[in-house]
Length: 369
Image (cartoon, rainbow, N blue to C red; front, side):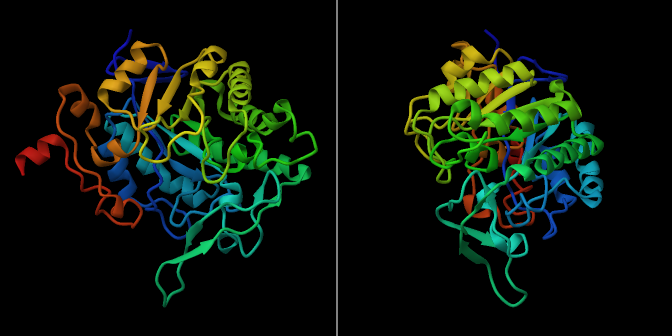
């Protein structure tokens, strides 16, 4: 069986190892969702990954409700991404852009007071950080009730995905990943505790995977299947979204993605020992593995030994690492040489600036210091 350090072909993307960097929202763009140069420092530092999956990046203003997250719908955003992607390539890395529509998790503060859209009229649990007024501190507000996305709006949504995917390629990205996980728009259509529709997008599994199918096909038509990945989160509640019978749902989704011919399928699937949410259902990836024959990437709380064990067992072709890559820019080396890891500073994950972002040392820098 392959090791974590062996190369892997992900469609048109030649990954130099099987240690991927998972998408990590960091909040270092401008208030207008334009990437900033410091993001080039951050991604270039981590170019030893076999593939970097970028932080979630909005396809439209309607779909982006995270403070200081980047987008890919405007010319200014495309131009700002270009030098960031170039720095990754100059450092010998590969990077794809994760395409994001947050659905009901967009607060009206981000979209001129309008209601967010979702599969059905429902409300996400908890609160969201919105932009402060000039004379106030951070604001957290409860989520607002979403309205159902109308069927006559779906062609425009597909156009948004296609434009963002094309913009990613224009900016130099090696490909894109469709974010269909974690309770965001596509996931709300997939899972039955958030989708109460009685039209062609609700009810049966075939109907609930329809939006995933249409979005993925449109992106593939735009950039090619060999440069398109998809992310799913199959085995438990995420941000209030869940399904009563996930195995047949996600088996059907995986089979559909196999038919479409995407480059890779990556999933966030918490394990019983997970530190960011424990599953309420056993792993679903075994049934998905049978339905999807392309490269399969697992993510959530993996370390070197259990990551290699997943490859040895044939459960996955690669492992995506999140917070460990955030805190260790040279993670592949540290795993290969069994070096200690930098501690994570969670209080600095989203605050902006270099602290807790680009100041994590490589092993050689730490030793020199």
